[in-house]
Amino acid sequence: MQKRSSVLFALAGGILIGALLCYGVLFLGGTPLPGCADYIAEEAIAPTGDFVATVFVRNCGATADFTTFVNIRPAGSKFDGDAFPVALILGGRRLVNIEWTAPRQLLVRRPAARDALFRETPLLEGITLKYLDLNGD
Image (cartoon, rainbow, N blue to C red):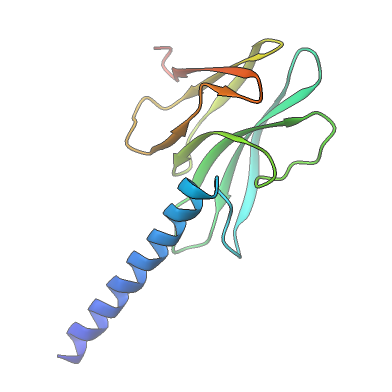
């Protein structure tokens, strides 16, 4: 009986951690929990030089999956995964490519699978975002 209680306790703890991470991603725009770290995967400066788009991956430790984001910030400002609007949120560590196609148009190539897609914003800070699958579709 004690073994079953331990399994249920561990399961409840896992569900609580998952719920907290989902809350942070969906309702706080990806605000990390304490102990999380962001790693920049790619950055692209707009043709006019006034914005920077960043692909970054958030790691919250061994008990949580990675999360991949794209955000846009004013050029000259320091990267902060929590301080600027997020255009794309994908569960897991995903390959995402970004490319400015015009002064206010950003092309985002991301995985075709939508199972891990939490957010995909078509317009952010006056910038139009177009999303394509990495295979070109």
